[in-house]
Amino acid sequence: MAPSGSPAPTCPSAAPSDARFVSCRRPDRHTARVVATLEGLRPLLAAGTDPRAVLLSSVASIRPADQALVDAALADDEEAAVAAAQAAIDRGEGHTIYGSSKQAITRWLRRRAISDDWAAAGIPLNAVAPGTTVTLMTESMLADAESRKGVDAAVPMPLHGHARPEQIAPLLAWLTSPENTHVTGQVVFVDGGADAVLRGADVW
Image (cartoon, rainbow, N blue to C red; front, side):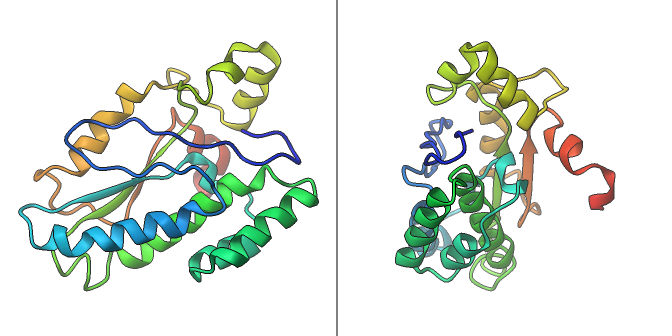
């Protein structure tokens, strides 16, 4: 969670050794790069055995987003995405960049997962959306009492609190395993209940 007016943080990811994952370094640019990577891998996946793909989203994807940034990312317009991100920072809304990038990649996922290129080719495509996870990126924030309070207010996790990467990795491994035959186009929240708290029951 970045303070208002500052760029969103980088998002390193942890993953089981037998899966492939993409981590973002610039949230305003990572959507296009994740898409390019997945689309580039798709022919190789289709030619293989039991192909599967999963990407990392975030519970931040359900937060209010910068629509200009989301639209630019979905249009594969990196220049416009960078400009929209800078405009958000200039308005004091830099905190929306990370969630906007995650919302864009989630929308792309939902559209592409059911297409001929993915579903008809027998390739499940899903996302995992963690809540607050204890990583090198978040350790300093969580160590400070005031910062931790802000993080927990933004991402309330009533079930067991903050997660660790090794608690998320088994789901990533299952989604990319041969056992996953019918789950596709899904964003699976591993957030200790944050999505249910923030969006409630009426989302259905």
